[in-house]
Length: 611
Image (cartoon, rainbow, N blue to C red):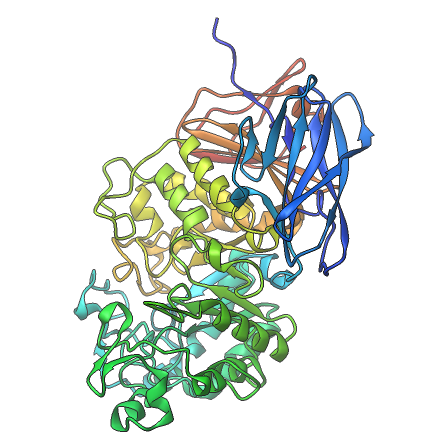
């Protein structure tokens, strides 16, 4: 007879959450008392912490703090000898054998240091930034206010009717102009708050040569087509009065080729601005972002560029964070390429300089990097506070939930998005999370899509799957990020095609059930601190279903996500001993029969219980 699948925690567990590591900020010289949980059923007789100090071995015996019939808690000393401390645990077996526990799990072989747990002295992103969710708005496509008709249309604009779909890419999509403005955003903040978002993230608002505005012509003013500087002042005031935060978007890798700096640079090789850009031959042969002639690449070896753009109270970075605009932080476009070209790599220096200005201008300022690939080498904790989590969240989730036979290109690779089992998703998530300090990982922006990707509903082709994934988005460690329109079921085959105008006056394109699902999922974060500050323990990994625990000292939540109907599982005694799970969200209950608790088998679906 086939044994039932059991949802069971791993024999030993540690992560960087407050349940296991004292809260920061930490400073050099601190001795951290770090904790480890070992199940009573585990074959281990003791624990030793192994760290690296000055890249040399440091050992600390684990001391039993509490013990009962279910688990033992150990505590060990971890000295903050270096700004970033790497550590793991030896799990001792009777007779002299041992296993390693690092951030990817338990291993019975020698493992490299790259996946060790990490803790830093650099602090973290501000606490407000992970309390709720981020709502991404492309200003041209969100809403037109009554006064939008009075805003001057840019010279490049090709007007489009508000309900007309965007083109699916190429040069034709760049000038498509719907005429949304900042005042229009202010008129729909009730939609944002009803959804459960707490931070507005605006793609660029500077004057530019396209609808997406990543080709800025100046960083000193707001595009008049959006209402100008005063419109941003008024929107910022409205956002903050509504209890929300406001984050802007800045391109530190390049400007537009009509930018005032670049025009000065081309006109005079001796001008200070000429040193702002990378040239092969002045004035016409310059380096562009991916060789695009419309996006000349900045040269961060220029001290004057650093002074004007990122350093000090007179810089571009500081100007928009200070009153009267009062942005709460920046998302940095193409952060991965900033300061990098051939043998030059100044990325870390630029990131640290921006962070210093952000924090000096507003103590609780936010700095998040765009990075579509592995950003771990840039996320030690002293520069970018966090990044958009394409690599560690969106790509694994896409590969688990993509519709069979989908035609979505997989991030520039010569393949469509593959469909993989739950084990592949979890391994990818754990492998990437292990490369980051928890102070960074738990503030990453997790997303199912963005203005640069296919719409998630188009990828999956299944509303139920979208609703289930919304719960995964809301409950996985980090910060949920939603691109405006996903909550109403927007579609689009790629980034340009997915930049649809919000259908405020077309109820037929407003999926109220999907909106309610997003709102319910995000609402859990405001009521349950474990979803914001809690650790993460995986307890079930099947082809079509995964489950994990989010825990603080005071709360434990169990999350189950299924992409299809599956065979089901029962909770292990270590979990079911806590009593009947109380359902917070989901279509079915966990069913208790005697001492056993059976998880529901429906799918696609998502469930959240309090234990």
